[in-house]
Length: 224
Image 1: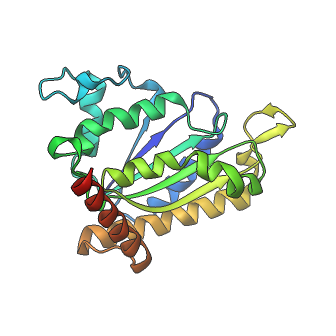
Image 2 (image 1 turned 60 degrees about the horizontal axis):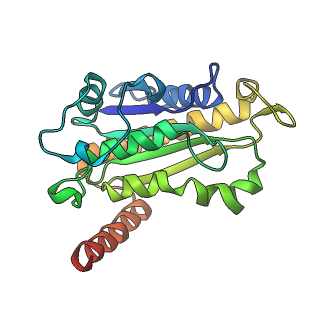
């Protein structure tokens, strides 16, 4: 069971990375799991342009490495800070580049059909800001992968990742409750991915959401 974890952001140490590692600990409670973690900041990828959709487009070594990581993938996790109401630019560029293999025929057909994915976000704002605003401003990440055919299976937002007002830094390592929760979410995700890999079925709630997404995609492809 192969799960890929993509880590965005450039800070070191990183709150998103600490939470991702806790999530991975939960995944690895399943002995059948095989986890690969890639730091987006370390991938040497050109900025996306239409040339990258051409059949004979040149591929950087790191892009080939990314494609290989997606090969036979059973689950995907993305962990990212929220910067100025959105995700780091290099994560958005990565998503744009994934479109070269995440979309099939005429770059409109979903190619990551049913792939379960989970999102982890960290931010300096309090929890109510997530519900009121940040959930909307970061929604492009989930929507992009849903457009590629993947199935959104959960999101964790960690608020107030600051040492003080306007002072950013590592804090989540001192939050045992958050680490425990994220570890538990990783374990649940691992079970979901394992079941999907075995049966091809998602839990009812996720399955219905995935079906609704496919219907919307089908409508859009037909009329647009």
